[in-house]
Image (tube, rainbow, N blue to C red; front, top):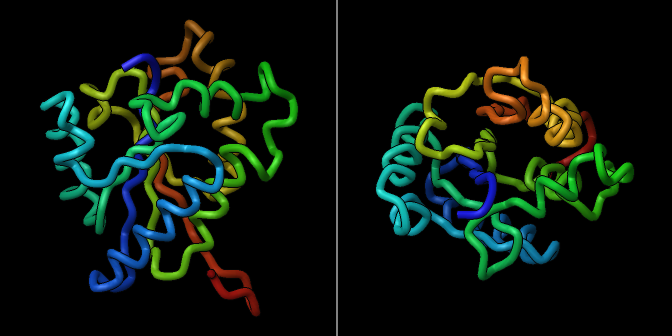
Length: 176
């Protein structure tokens, strides 16, 4: 692995919707050129510790499924996604075409009860990282500062963490 992992643990409103929701997640990733690897057995195929951590998150969070978002379909890390999403180098990080747009797309998918993102340069210690409850906009803001946080020697986990997003549907706006 050449960079940070970007895992998404998806909680479902109805467990029977897992295939439909996973197709929507895969479509959202593919529309941005990202790769998507679904399920702890496949994500952890190259690292048994990663598999254990993902399974622990799934149990802890009661998620329907886990997905690892990667730079492209042939990659295993999210290095470029995170780098391009950081306003430290790319001031236009809030453009809907990047990671910010992807996070917002996922938050709008019908059938998703909860979204938890794990961003970690050290997946083996991911389960011990601090957990944060954030809105979608707060998480996007955090991602835009990722490289800045990574360079801060005072930060214990730098930009890494477990981010449970608070999802809400605004009045008169249905999730797609």
